[in-house]
Length: 397
Image (cartoon, rainbow, N blue to C red; front, side):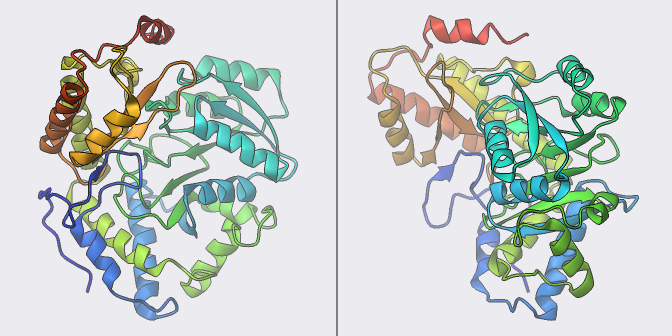
């Protein structure tokens, strides 16, 4: 038996650890942690049933009511799953257009270099969104491009990229779309009935609120069938993992049994909260409460409201001479909150996550902790430098 939980209860971490205000790993429910106390046989019927339930529940989250897709979990971190998707679904003679606006688009390019897959890119810098018109122009200019890939939520900046409009133009131009929805799937809508794509990839320790240990790919069955022999890797071959799971119910190699057990509890909690719609509502409220409070302290967001994701928000560092991020980080941690350093190259910043087992009341505590930390640093305003606001002005309203 897996642990039970109370759907609307948001208790402080039972072991007293800080809240993780990051895009994953994140703060998990005690019942999720508790599920990992039992050992499971990787070939046993009970564990095979758990794997089957997990795959079926993930397909429901994706909206696959026509049974055109299948779900394939893959051991390792999210980056393992992204590489598996690229290596399996991109034929060796394909060419992919990478839409980049942060570190994870850059990692995709790095992966393609390792794989030896031809690619081109639209690089929008640290945070500007790729738009449909640019994608259309790039596809018209290069008939060799067969696929396009986009990061759904680029957590370097916190921007939520316009996947729906990108999908429309990709298929209008006769190409295929892959989606890295690592930090968005399970909250931000990526229903296969609304947005067309060949495959998407996500991870256990993101919006479903499980723990790290595996990623998963949701792909069209026709794409899975056609991908035999594409992959560069034995262990990352999604086609072979899929074929084995459908034949035997087992993972090809040792599965992260405890992580799967925890994830299954997290999936059931996700369903009880109202699925992706319910989770999005909570995360959005988390973001709105936190952003409003931080702005009252003088902090400014990198992105205008239109582009703010409900996953993670980037704030400019204050211009005040007494502000030092490392000290601010340690003061916040001492108060029970771990925030995330910034990844922008042009201005100094930090990030605050909105996902995990937290609600708006906890986000108010985050704001109060930030106010107290600023006071301890003798920083009377969190207003950013003028250069930061000049940089933000480059982003269309």
